[in-house]
Length: 299
Image (cartoon, rainbow, N blue to C red; front, side, top):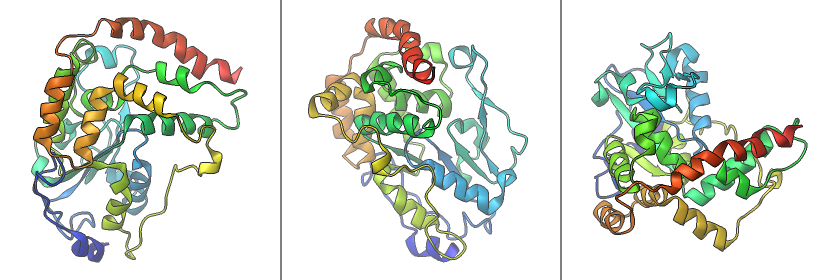
């Protein structure tokens, strides 16, 4: 693995890929031979991160990788900043997962190579929808609609995950933010990453890491296209999802490498600076749609 890292390590300027700062991963960083640099990976759901996490856990054992669980208290997301259960192996080298708060680095961010992947919101919803059917294929009795599934979440779900679980923003505060405020906070958060890229770069990063023999790690959690219950969504639905999730869409442009200041300028012109009262109606309807997509299909 160190040979692969040495071969592929490269400096990347902030202008090349949005907010990814100039950074170079030490050739021995991920192998554990270096005392200064380890991996911090914040895993947005459905962005290919399960393969990376499984690979690290297999190489170093679960005790060698901090992958915190979520605090499932009903008030956690709404009122608390830190929404994870403090893991018993807090001193482990690498930090990964859906609930890997920046705070887990304990002020030692310069010691970590920080990575996060993103994707287009329409592709994210489609992937998550198919995954829900695939994961529950043995127990689900009837399919639920894509439209109902999309309504079972609040708008900009990737941004929500980033701000609540990585940046430790309280849920109630996040909910009442304007889209522009969410975008600005998200930008400040991704600026702290060394790599913030589109999901298409996941394979490149897996090759960058490699395994002890220099091979790309085995894929996990990836369903074949033939297993998808919905192969694609039409253009009108894509446009609707883009309109409903403008913050996720703009951050995806940064992940694709569009010039950051241009995206900021676009955000200033298209994002609302006031709280959208329609979000209250949507939030009130979320339990109904979750019942239709998380309960009804299984009874």
